[in-house]
Amino acid sequence: MIVEMKRFCIVCTADAGEAALESLREAGCAHLDLSGANSGRFRAAGAAFEANLRAVAAIRNAAAGKPPAPQGFDTIPSDADVCVQAPDFSVLRGEAFSAAAEAAGALRGRLAGAVARLEAAVAEYAPFGGFDPALARGLEGKGFKTVLARAPAGAECQVEAEIVRETGPSGARFRHFAFVNPVLPLPPQFETVPMPAEPPEAWAKRLEKARASLAAVTKALADQADRIPEIEELAPGLRDAAAFAAAEEKLGASGGLAWIEGWVPVDAVPALRARANNESWGLLLRPAEPGETPPTLVRPPAMFRPVTALFSALGISPAYTESDVSIPFFAYFTVFFAMLVGDGGYGLLTLLFTALAKIKLRSRFPFPWLVLLSVFGLATVGWGALSNTWFGASPEWLANPVSAWLDSNPGGQDENYHHIMLVCFTLGVSHLVAARLWNAVCVFPDRSFLAQIGWAGILVFMYWMTCSIVGIFPGVPDAMVGAMCVSVALVFLFTLRASELKTRGIELGMLPLNIMSALGDIISYVRLFAVGLASVKVAQNFNDMATGLDMPAWLKVVPMVLILLVGHALNFAMAGLAILVHAVRLNTLEFSNHKGITWAGYAYSPFRKH
Image (cartoon, rainbow, N blue to C red; front, side, top):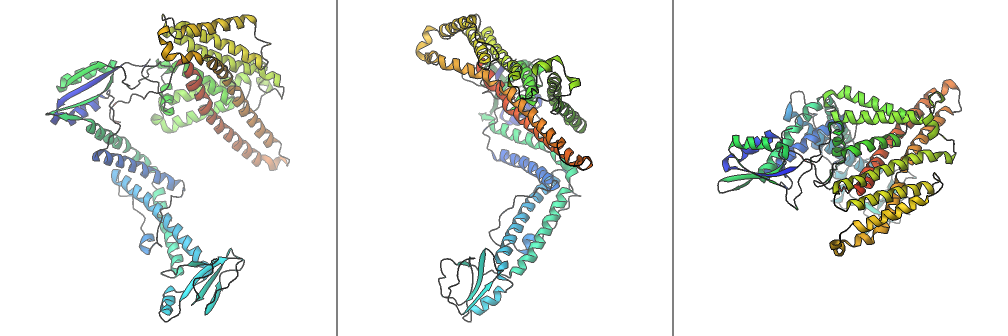
């Protein structure tokens, strides 16, 4: 269910405002609107939290050997820019360690920028050979001006000068020249290269120093990989500080009084009222008024409650005035997960990875995700057993009547796909009809429930028509045509009242298009068959590639294992992507459109310490 919310306003003396926020945070039941905060304290707290995240990222990137993003240099870096000492983290703890790690991460970026700038400079001037710019400037004072230039490899040198010297290797992309007292301007094909401030040989030495400094800082950071939890432990407190600063900014004050407003679940009202009595607050409570948008707290039955973790991960929440669809979402998402993955072997991998994650992370592995992944993995193993598909293979000794009926490996006989397509379309119509019948129950005894019954009938007719189009059924019986006519009449007559025709009459005009859309919704469930079949075929092809290598048995073991590991890993990852795209879509689009769920809400997030 979606828990009822009450709007509250707490009033206290102005000097007790901060203490009231502390007490409210301790209660952990009040949802405050903290958006739009922009105080200096909030920005500082937010900056500290972001710095903490950057410190963790700096260590992880260094440990993984990931190159930093170079920070640009407008001029050639000096020795002071590149000759730096690697930080000593051994004596640092807590926030000091976090700040030093963040600074070292920024230093890596600056050193990477210095390396890139020096490499570019050395490469640009290397074709000119070794020379001393100071000597060139001294000769210029005596009337001998030296100009460096380059031209495309095919260009002819038609420059008039007292001395013309071509430098650099032959056959290069550019020809490089040094001219003494040339006639200016140079021909258009010649590009003048500025005379450097110091010898390029100094840059090459500085480049080596920059690389050595970058390697030292990277190693110092990488050696702290086992201390990442020490920094991560600071993050909740920093996030709490930012939230408290935002709440302080939202604290109203006038005439010696302070107040804060928010939302509280109806079952937490007694606790809030008791705290208000103990703290001597004034407390105003009222239900949500039309036009207000309270946060949504979804509280399904305990068996289905882990699905709220999936909602949070997807960033979706039904609106406060909508229905809680957790039960059908969880049930159908599980079936869709199994069919889209389509392979019992991958289901075993899902269970294995879940168990390994639980063993490694222990209490840090969220229990809802343990339940979700276990259920999804078991469902996939079950579907693999029914369809007899295990890592792309179909062992005969595991064949069963269901796998024979589904014929998940038909060997190119397209007509045998009808059974699995029938399963997909049947799942689809049950999913959508359940949404319409649920609507009918919700609006009963209002006569509009008959329109929802009509839509259920339209969906059943479209299901029959879809199965007939693809050849599963021989045709649409006359009884179904009659039921369709009755269903359309129910929708047309009972969707709107007579008083609503002027303002919403367009909905009836759109009825033919909506009916055709219902046909598309049923057909959309064929993706379960198509994506699942693609996953199985890809696995089979990798198996054939591995076993079909034309080389001696002793020689093909290693490449065969590599092909199988890489191929199935890729296919497993693609199956995960298919779940995010297709299983989520069928629940949040097709089903939700028929149920009337817009997913336009925002989740209840109590003000509390983490």
